[in-house]
Amino acid sequence: MGKKLLALILLMIILSNSQVNAETVTWDFSGGGSWNIAMHWNPDTIPQPGDDVIINDAHTGIITVDGDAIIKTLTFSGALTITLSTAILSISSAPLKAFITSTSHSGNLGGFDGADTTCQTAAEAAGLLGAYRAWLSTSATDAYCHVQGYNGTKSAKCGQSSLPTAAGPWIRTDGTPFAGTIDKLVSGEIYTPPQYNEYGVLVNPAVVLFTGTNPDGTLNISYSIPRSCDDWNSNNASYQVEIGNSNGTTLLWTSSGSTVCSASGHLICLQVLNGPELPARTFPAGAKRVFVSSSTHNGNLGGLSGADSMCQSLAGSLNPQGTFVAWLSDDTHDAKDRVTSSGPWYRLDGIKVADSKADLTDGIIFTSINYDNTYSYSPMTFVWTGTDSDGTKSTYNCSNWGSTSGDGTAGNTSAVYYWTSANHFSCGTSYKLYCFEQ
Image (tube, rainbow, N blue to C red; front, side, top):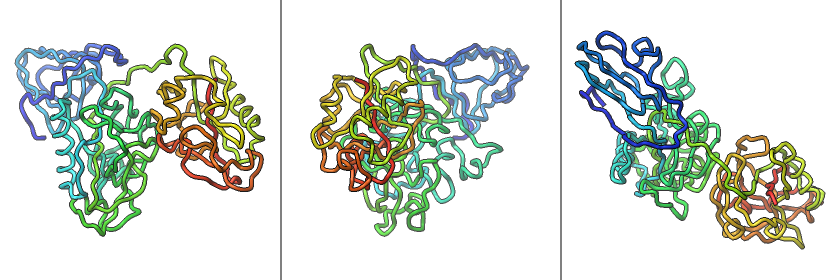
């Protein structure tokens, strides 16, 4: 975006429960100058998300916004002029949005420009204000840098003096938190799968997401050269590219396998800039808690009672206290019957997992169970369950969870479909447990 007089993207959206600590910041520099210099403001601070900005200086001159900025309100009068220098000035107190495009495309997206235009066009068609960029990597630029408006690689700090982190947090278009700031997003702090398109409609079943990007926001180099469908300019069926899964969290949302560049895929679109904090999350009255264990164990768990004791021990530091059992089946017990509560269940970070027992056993949960008893987001891993998607016993249970021989069914902490039944593995392997409050 070149210099455009008063070319402000005005996002006059007020969110009553925004958690930003706002203050009033007034321009107090005689004449024009850079927006991004603290001493030009009173108090001496560059305006932040949630701030009310006042510019009423009688002097003439130009205030240049030379770095992306987002504020709550702008009161403008006087003889000064505001221009943008390859920057975006957004006026909004609403959280930034993330969505999946409702349309699909081959790997020939027209490069970054074409992909970003696809995101921007989709957002505008749905009435979403603000600027959007596609979560994509090329041979020269990582997605981590691109969504912040920079070229280059994350390892080279996106061409900056220090690694930038001015992006996020984001909510989905259904209003549910998606991810924290970009540094948290690339560390696996994904609250819910992207799942929703620009219109706030659930994309179901799961769709392929073109990304070319590893979970840490860098270019995936596992597949053919040229990389990333020739930097998103080719639909050659002989080229492969990394894809994400719309129903994944942790790492699956951006890195779940590959497809060919002639295939059809959707885009993940992220609203740019560093936005206000997400609204605080609270547990509804009567809600029960669920977590994935911070510890791992082989298939010899000491039977169901031994696994339950492990869950109860791990829950000992939680406040308030509660009674927890392992989501585990054996030859004579179904996990769905061992969990006696009727729900709803929420993770310890306040994100809903399931509304009811029926919701828990219908094959898909609201979000993955990737938050553990230490209040940390777990890397993608597997979890012993012995349980099929409907909550009943599976064929494999490590001899009723008393042996390291044979196989046991395990779920995936990054999935909402395969959370309880992803595959079966050797009982000598160490995996985690799901712990449900009764």
